[in-house]
Amino acid sequence: MILGYISRPSFYIGACVVGWGLTGALTGVTKNFAGIMACRMFIGLPEAAFYPGSMYLLSRWYTRKELALRSAVFYVGLLLSNAFGSWIAAGILGNMEGKLGIAAWRWLFYIEGVVTMFFGLLTTWLLPDFPYNTRWLSPAERHLAQVRLAEDPGEADQDCLDTTILDGFKLAIRDPKLLGLSYINFFPTLTATLGYNTTVTLLMAAPPWVFASICCVINAWNCDQTGERFFHIASWWWAVIVGYIISLATMSTGGRYFSLFLMSSGYCGFVLTLTWASNSAPRPPAKRSAAIGLVNGFGNLRNLCDIPSLCNVKGWGRTFGKQIGVQNIISL
Image (tube, rainbow, N blue to C red):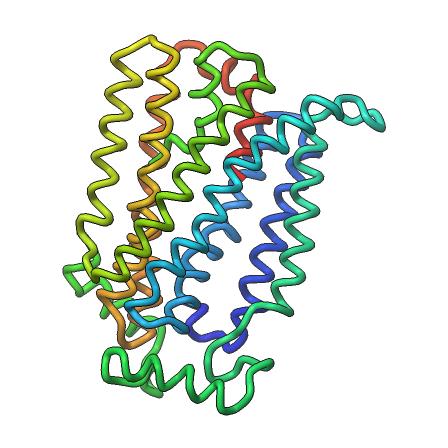
């Protein structure tokens, strides 16, 4: 919501990325469980602003028929990070233990945190702002970008002078269309149940996310071409349900590994959720920014459902403590 009133989202989003990387790197210096939980708490601040903020910025540049594919290409970065992050983790955990007297899991946070901060600083220079004030566009290009968006719904993509953040929030919560996948955090743990060592487990965690990335782009492209939203979003969740059933019903290694591919495919539908929110509340921008934030925020409440489940599993603390280094870097 704040991003809608900041004229330089490149600085805002760049600062979020730098803060995200800094908190991730500081996780490597923690000494106990409380320290790690504190880092996980604070990393949620820039993380919460980054994804919906980026989606809102995309909605300020692309029309409704262009947004799904662009959003999917952006979100594929997360899916691929789950894949290549596992490979990076396998290399670091397998080869950097004790280097300079530092544990390998700490190196994992240091390296990925520093790389994240580097790209965050680049973002402040490379990322565009809004169509009317992006500094590296010519006046004609800025005008064209604004005209495209105005022609899409038939009105200019801008707020009235007297529209406030609170006004946009009120408009969003009054719209009935807008108020109506936690396994990613434990994906390495699920893969570990197949019975392989840590390195092989991390390597095997990658292919399901590569598969999901490919499906995600194809699904979003077809969504833009057809203009259909419901089946492009909801049908993938049936695949996730089937994946859950298979993982619960069989001890076959092949069958359980196949279920991970079905689980990861659920993000093909999830990535279009904020696209749908943007399309359903296109104007004014203040309402759109509030709608994206609300849908994303309420969607993340499902993570609270994991807490009772973990607390009721015997020995969950010991198990979680052993895997905290790997799980945190995957979720980062």
